[in-house]
Length: 305
Ligand code: ADP
Ligand code: MN
Image (cartoon, rainbow, N blue to C red; front, side, top):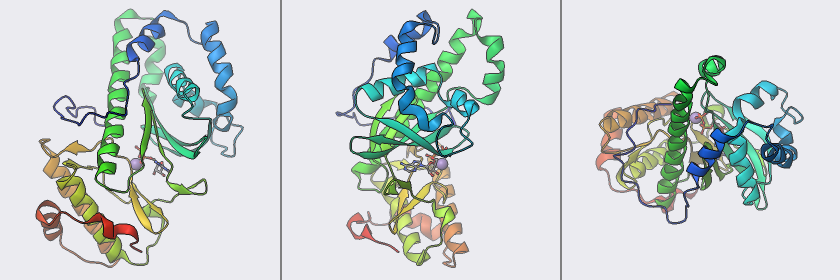
């Protein structure tokens, strides 16, 4: 995660539907209470323990053990999940779909069917090892809070980037809720099974998929005024014959000083992917299409393979 991205300079459109949660209040209560021994947290944990069964080593994924639980579900994360459950957004968290350095993605269930819940880590391994030296030392109390704030800002950025891309008709998961380090979004899968990554499948018509993805890059740039900045076969899911773009936390606005550089990298990766699949094209020409080609019509996009 690149936390150096200046987000203050970004002019994101206001998201009317989205209400800022009362983060300050939660932060204040964080400092006043001792974790779990406080009856309030004990009750909260009792409330959601059943709903978290799938991630506590009782589910079908053996690698989910106590350590994963500790890494992902710290106190403030549990508080955020508790709140999302109380508000009716999530019923249960079922099992992990993927774990990364920066986040775990879980399949969850709501009244309306499956959801994807991306939980960003607020501590990293190094930090965790140091925690015992830092906890209780007032000189460092600002450090972890600052780190948390950066993570929270990052998650909000992914939420807003997804929204902006959805508005332009792109195939990205619909963002649903966002609280602290938790992002709840549309589940990309079929009948509860998550879709594979483009990396893990063979497509029948690489040229058509390439064209579709190049259009996607053009819409992200020209219509959303963004650049994905981590566009690759790892961040594209394949659902029912069409690609879905995910992982947009690092996407930046086109005015970002490195935006063009990121775009070149995105286009290069796509060009190389298509080349490996037997469809040879030139990066320079593809770049021109993304930057200056006519704004693509996404209505033709319904099936590409
Ligand atoms: P990371 O930052 O860890 O790379 P990603 O957003 O790429 O996070 O998600 C990691 C993995 O989780 C993806 O490769 C994909 O398999 C799965 N995933 C992410 N979002 C969804 C979603 N909305 N629906 C289904 N699976 C998802
Ligand atoms: Mn990813």
